Amino acid sequence: MSQWVGTTEPGIPRLVALIEMLICWLVALI
Image 1 (tube, one colour):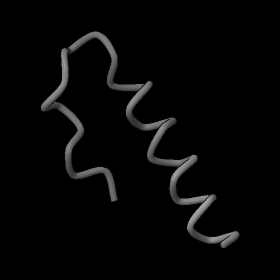
Image 2 (tube, helix red, strand yellow):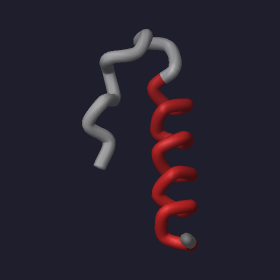
Image 3 (cartoon, helix red, strand yellow):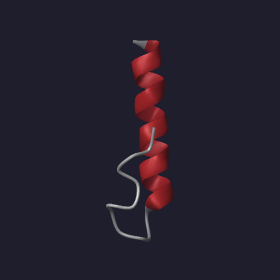
């Protein structure tokens, strides 16, 4: 699911994962 993890800075990988989780939740709810 997290394909674009690592393309960002090596200091905010968890933020990207959290954002992806939120997007997945929204997509599942909608």
